[in-house]
Length: 444
Image (cartoon, rainbow, N blue to C red; front, side, top):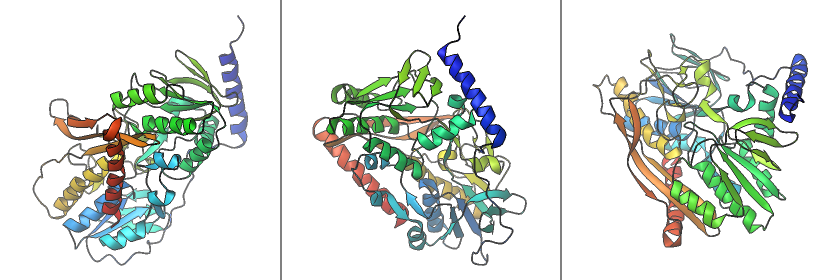
């Protein structure tokens, strides 16, 4: 029986990987050196809370702890010097907001909200001595909150092929973590000459459920406005659009029928980046360019310091008590934001509103208070569906806790999935108003 093309390419891939890896292995992450010195911070003379991660969760926790406990010293540890927002970045990809609009100053937030910003990478934790190890020295703490967000999990696509993973990260990034990968994707979109542009959506509780569908709409609209002979091929591992189904389906069908093809139940089984060829269980696709969104997991630091576990939704999220956010077996370590294992949306508004409750939990521990009542975060999520004119849809909901199966689900969600007419225009205006208010809340 003749060997199939798929089998031949897999054998070539295995041989190539083995040959290359024999001379130079590719680590998943760059090894960071730990300093043996104390971090250059003011002498600790009062109770200190350290927060690891300066995203929507970490920023909001830092601010709220200082509001609730003015005498507590708060140190925000973040590896980047500037904050760049993922929410609203899809509009930046197609030139509808500026990079300056998404970019904010950590030092400004720290000054305005009376906490300390310390730029460094967290690389270890001494739980017995209450010391956080960073690339710029050790930090003593009384309480610590990890809000490091997500990392990507390429294993279901690459089947352990590290060279393939490296190429996917560098050449076809997902762009659902702020920074370099967004710039790569924007360059791809704006320099695309035509053909098929593949985007993918993972299963599980990935970061911002509607964002990949929003992105597909905006990129299709961008190609349409440029009059390109181009089409977005959206491969979704899920059996249907995961949220705001009516709004996105009608946009796909009525606005982008010639520019966007949606394929549910499309999990990648095989990929060849040289021939730009993909196989799913049911179909084959050639592409001219692409952005591959893998599954997500809790940020690597959680695993490094031993406070992660495999969960129902994703790999290696925070090992916490679901209602109190403290790490199992640890009274002074908390995990918040997208690294949590709970069934909340991994989105900015959810992380920011959740942060107030987490701040209350930490301050309650500081004050030796009695048990406090659980508070739901709020998922308020706008999704643009067109850029000329700008129109949007949204969902707004809190969560309910099911004591029987110990899970969370939407409680009385309110949606506006009509993008036509004045409602869609008003939703788009509200999307910008919401972002303005959230940036002001975190940084002013």
